[in-house]
Image 1: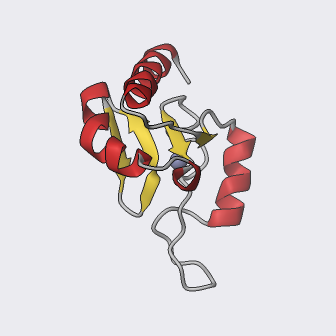
Image 2: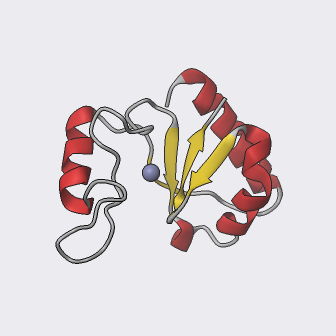
Length: 108
Ligand SMILES: [Zn+2]
């Protein structure tokens, strides 16, 4: 992640740990080619896919992962993280987006 986002994320993760919540990541910075791959596998965000589901990936070149501003949290491996983040992440400048409760991006 880029400097400010990385610092804010470290502070947030430390604060969560003090509350007994261990935040584990599945993804953070993503290169352009990695985003192309994700878009191919998950579809473009909000666009209906052949399987009937809405796509989840940002258009390559526009992802907050590619800008070093986003993390994906492994909610299954981080008990309490979802609730903790919803209650506390805004204090550290992070927000989530609709339909992706695991995705948190730095907005300052
Ligand atoms: Zn994400």
